[in-house]
Length: 368
Image: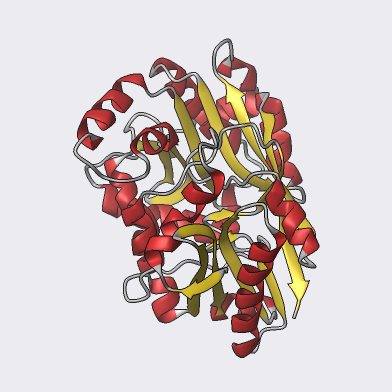
């Protein structure tokens, strides 16, 4: 007998481990990080701008699946929608279990006055989104969503249809020549006296986050589904990055005292999380030190350019700086988080870099 549970965090966290077994690709968030995200008293997204709940399905002590249901009221107002989202959808290859989870999310959404359910959103457009539909054998990087091949099939069987296609990418740095990105326009940007390049480092990191948020909100303002982040939301999501950032890889660019560009690149933590089972334990410090010695993968979480600098070569100049720094630091692979098909400019930039598609993703939706 399948038992539906609401807000049972233990079974929620256990679901992908119980459902996917020894899947070599899936990696979970740290247990403590997931608990923090799903704490309505701490997460300002839910406390100030939305509502949420989460469900899991258990049978005979085993957790067979999970899902979060949430609504972002500011997003609906900004984009003229009456939409709720599902996120963190993980389950066994069982249509009854998937139907029970998604049915509970849909009923919760109806009670909130919504007309549509869409996902994965974990939990906003600035976090992990999408359902992997191709590239299932490729390990994801930090801040990339992953699911096995049966998830999109089960969504289809439950009446959901795909939309908003996206792609993640990977660049092999061995043999890569950053100089190939240089042209007169990029060289001019790199030589401009009025532009100041500052590395993101632990010292002064909180102040740098303020400037990062300014560029992010101004740059992404016209993007689909984007909602400007408040300072509290952004710090809640990003402040812990201070403890994992490699101070050689990420840049803020200033024109005078005005921040006009940012690229945030961090080491990929997924190998560490995989080895530790996404839990702190007695062996975690040892595993962390070992990870620091052997890390070879990094991921660009986002890059952003202020609209006043669009078309002037700042974006490729930042990527030139980052890829050069990665090679100098001994990294061998670079992941790049999702880019929507409609974002032609960013896709062209990745193509020029020589990035290869890693995962194909879609959002899925169903009317209520």
